[in-house]
Image (cartoon, rainbow over all chains, first blue to last red; front, side, top):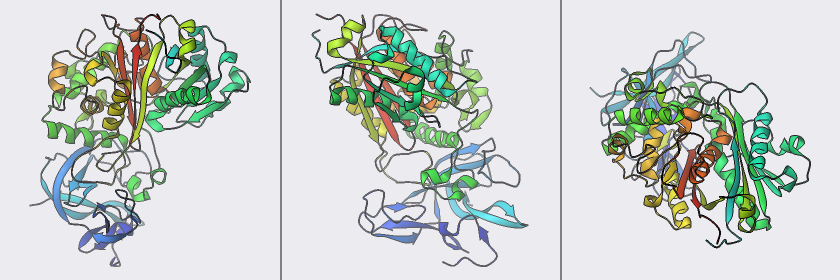
Length: 135
Length: 389
């Protein structure tokens, strides 16, 4: 895994790489199903013949919502502001994540994977993954 | 009808008012059990098998310390939002498997205010999922209905129709929690919680208890003037392609749902079709869930919901009176009690003694549906078979 020194993320196992950012899923050798985050077995066919793969970084908004109230802990933030969450169709798998940059979206809109600041820890930003509208 | 001795009937039923409750969980449960026993004229010592369901921390099987140490087998069930229906199924199975005559089921909970707070580890998820604000049930409901509305070309206003219907029923129901009417416009214009769902489109966790007494066919008509036959009860889990709460990923392709599977199984086992149902209860954790579940159970074709609400099909005089006690939207969701509340309401409707609005024309066939985490659904078909020949 190539996590560069200096970029702290919410969970390094979610990524095969953070610069450029790529999510780590797993692919089943038996049935071809992709899942995220990576797992040791396939929930579709029960096979344990699974390998970690980098997922596509571009997709379309499959569904979205905007969170208008601050979730209870363990949610962590520096300062709450309404934020969007969506499912993004990446092709082999639909991944749930932050939709960043705005709070109103359209299903089918093109998006691409980015790192987004989740909170600050000891003065340094901690990043999670998100998707922003492709310009 | 002639009674099959292996058929299982509901012969007694009682519920508490739902809402906020300051006492102990077990107090609620005891009130419901004693009410159900009184409803059919039995004593606790007559009960041969008991099942209790809760999603909280108390032990249902310890209710015997309040009700009586009769030595009976008492099974505890904890299956999330499906707890009540699973408790009912367990009691039915117990009667049949053990060759017993009379069982008691109780479901209860007394939840803290606000959305449920759950730990990622309980669902096999990393801490990041909760820390980044994705472990939120309301956002799941919103994401699911947003997609459903898009796929079937249903307007957002349909969600307002569902809310207004729920509170309209509840205003006449003495045990419902939220009995103040809400218009479609009020529901649409209320504070947005998670687009497209507003404040009036979510149920909230609260407190309540429901109890039922079940009897085998050979005893049912001695214990109750109008016993209601539990024609079927079916429980199903998720398959690939379902869209469940706390899912960091979904599989592309055709969508499946445990509700589709459980409803089909319940209809098949009972030998009826969705078109035969005359009064129904669906899991309406939010307005969108009701809209989705109408389609998934087959009660309405996908995409026809909007017109059905507008035409009053789900009103008390409509084709299919739906959630006639106000459903979860107006009763809240004490998780362990909620599925049994549905059965309680259908039983009352089929017996012609509804606590709130009564469906006219003596309906014979009712249906209930619960659905919840981590992707399970249970459905029942309930039938008033009329007088014994």
